[in-house]
Image (cartoon, rainbow over all chains, first blue to last red; front, side, top):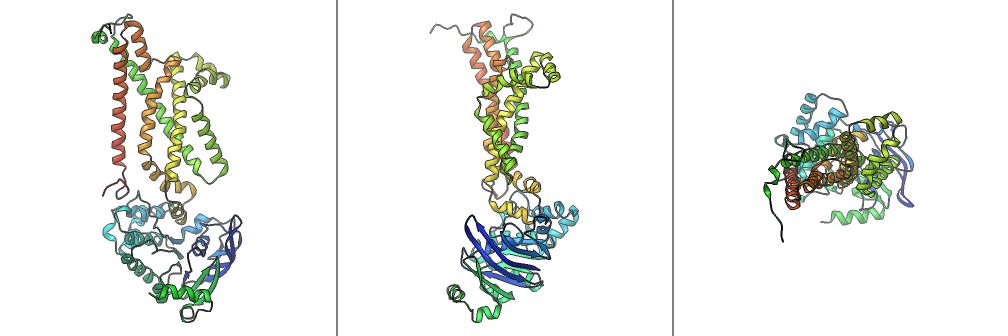
Length: 242
Length: 246
């Protein structure tokens, strides 16, 4: 589904990504972790072209992201993305947030978009909030709406960029629960996250990055059992020991 | 001070007859309001377009918009007015220039002042709009992109509606400014409010009454504007957003 091949990126002369290669197969859940500044967020943003990269190729469902001829807007419309800071549109009600892209990008009718949006809102347990505005919801609720908004576009895969990093601890689980459910339904997911519990539960593979490079790319059990790289061992010992 | 106060002067008849000085003032008030409102319309339309262009990720467009802003806000308003009134008709295609010069003097004065004030204020509105757009989190842009919106759609549905709400308070002061700046039109002879005050002084030799009356009228206009913009601000408030209440 997603193939990342030898991808490198520079900001000016500073290299932020170095020769990254990995793939995410259809139905697979891959967790990308690593210390901050390791390039994991940058890498996931390259997948739907939010960030440009200078070398290598990324294809999503056979479409090359870096190709100037690619219609990126069209590609993005069926690649769902969830952001660290939710990024709901503050001036729109929750229902409008869920329907605007369905009607304006996919050309669905208002009725169709609303019923789809409300069904997804129901699924993330927020049907009662349909007429509220994002600023009136808690962080966890906003993030669940953001997931519903992405799902409303019937995405072929989902990208999560640190979806729980901006949340209060007691709100993390309500978001993770939605993500676990999604993973168990067979959604193709690439998740940048530090939530190792989530990784243990649903990930098929774990990718560990450091200094802009993929250091370890292993099946979940292998990664948590005995990470091969010393750097990954250190990282795990720091975040798992408490 | 040996000054002969006479507030009754407003009700006395003008030398041309058939009307009072008060009526003169109200005629001036009407021109001031018409001029300012039509110029404000131009300022909003042009200002939003230029403000948006200043932020687009396209070098050519943003340079063009920046040039507009720098030109219009760095030439004194009075000079701009003279350029529009005296120079522009000469630069237009000949037929247009002639049509302009043959029109009623009041039309000439009004059009020149309207375009001048509108485009000058547009540069200032554009700066507010740009600041409003730039104050939005970068993630809003990314979220619009990630949903498959095209560039115009991101502006239309995501950035501009929110930026417009944010800039209502600074736009209020631009709206107030346009009424005050409209007084420059007196220099090309438009009989707006401050011009009428001057006339009143010339005819009645009662400068205190005349200028106090005009001051009160300008203040009254601006109180109304502030009230209306305040209402607009309240009506467009985003629930749960800063200053939006619950």
